[in-house]
Amino acid sequence: MSLNWIEISKDALIHNVNLIKEKAKGKRILAVVKSNAYGHGLIQVAHVLKDHVDAFVVGDFEEAMELYEHSKNAKIIISLPPLNEKELLETSKLDFHIFVGNLQYLNWLNSIKLDNPIKVHLEINTGMNRSGLSPEELLKALEIIYDSKTLRLQGLFSHYATLPENMKFAKIQAEKFKSIVEKIPQRENLLIHMENSSGILKLLLDFTNSVRPGISLYGLIADETKEDNFKPVLSLYSTIIDILKIRKGEGVSYDHLFIAKKDMFVATIPFGYGNGYMWNLKGKAEIIAKGKRVPVIGKICMNHIIFDASEIIDYIKIGDKVTLIGRDGQEQITVEELARKSGTINYEIVTKLSPKIKRIIV
Image (cartoon, rainbow, N blue to C red; front, side, top):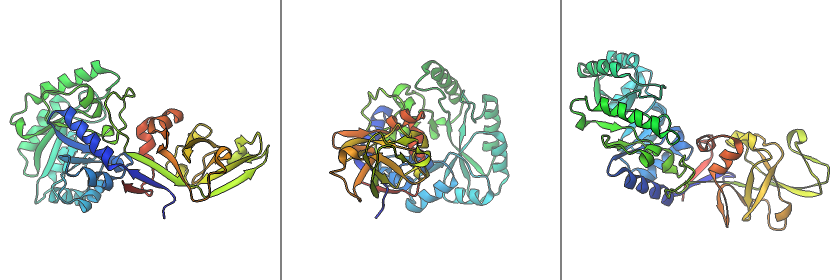
């Protein structure tokens, strides 16, 4: 029996991808599942989505192989391309696509002799300035690919830098990308993509044929107005492993950051920053036990969180479930709440969750 576990809602995940399809108006869906599907579980998420999307975008070669072993028919795109020949051999053999954003890497790819071609999506830098080819470099890249026996062009893409906050700059990026795409011959055979989750919702383009939803798949869209009815997919649970009575004036956890102002009961769960919980949530976060919010007290430990159990002491026992993320009765703790309290973004809250935590599709 697992003391900590994550539940992935199949219904919520399918609801979200169907909502994305509706917003994307027939474009191909390249589902972004990098970083262990944003902490939700690569294999679990891909299992649910395999019949609902056109391809999966993974983080690296290791994730590509992990997904391939569980879903050999999936179309897989690697966003951080391989850097050794053995991985490239497998990439070409297994028909993975890769993102390429600079000439040096493209030339290196072209120098390697392979039995099967490498299928590439060229990244155009329109303002993200993280990676990507300039318009001038793109012309050279196309020359290399068209003259190559090793490389095959499968797609062109760019990446929004400022959505949803700065629509003006996003539109400038989109126009730059459009002007480049329109000059590419035989582009109807390519995957043309720019829209991420915010792009799908805020700036859908008329010249692309594919979209790359990430955070919206998991119901964690950046726009907190939540006018689009996405549903959170992940719930996180732990188990009470100890209950103690402490006296007024006694301290709790490391350095006694918390001092009891009265006699009270505390309970402990086996989850901490070593499992992916944010350490700086000490004294800020709550969890849900028996349908009631209770405060986390003292410093977060590597594998322990302590909470004030005084108001629910008559209802709890060792072995009871508690909710760290998700709903219990009328109460709900969201990823956004934890992100706000810890001064970070919702992406970090979920991607920090240890891959060792058991993930269950429900």
